[in-house]
Length: 131
Image: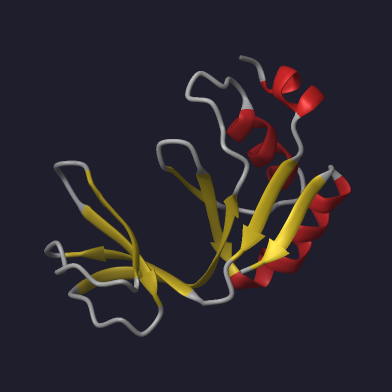
């Protein structure tokens, strides 16, 4: 399904998480903790997105970050959703880091870009709530 088809009948909803997050390159996978948002391992490095302040074995990090989660359930075969969202933000010089779950996409950005990103998304008919 192409993104344009989805938006004919579906409202795109997103939420901004209130907490600040850190994207960290770590030396080992941390133990489970509710403050961890995501762990990505690719065979050459381990990246962790966690609430800022969680002690980790950090080798590099970016912070403070904020997360916008797209709450609309997205079909697995959807084509172009992230391309559309990232282009809107790239056109405004907003850098982001994207993470996809099974049916939900999330974008992380430096906190300094959050207000501008929210405005851009709202101006493009994305309904945004604070979590």
